[in-house]
Image (tube, rainbow, N blue to C red; front, side, top):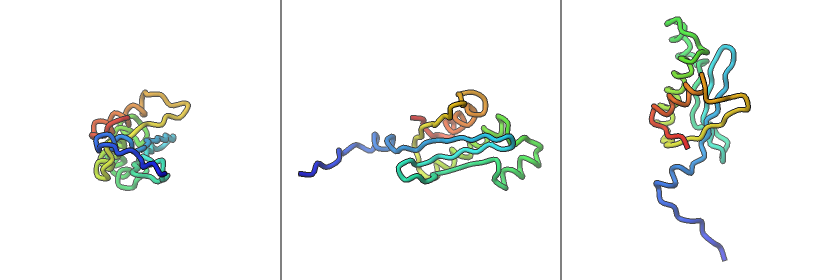
Length: 118
């Protein structure tokens, strides 16, 4: 006898999608990506290394690694997630990361873009 999987309403199903936000900060750049863990694929990513964003930041004489750059990356990532239809994400912190500074800027700007944190 085969037991079918439980039928869950859509309002619950949209929050069970395991999308994880991962952030990486180097001495020059800020990188963030959202990974769909069951398939190990990148749903969306944003980086201050991207040519268009990097050139715009250099022309405006902005830094590509500070808190303001992290906020821009979070906003761009949030817009890309909205376009893909990802309603909610969870955050993966590395051992040395805390909710402070650049990490806080990325997470807050993703949240402001309309993505919920689970």
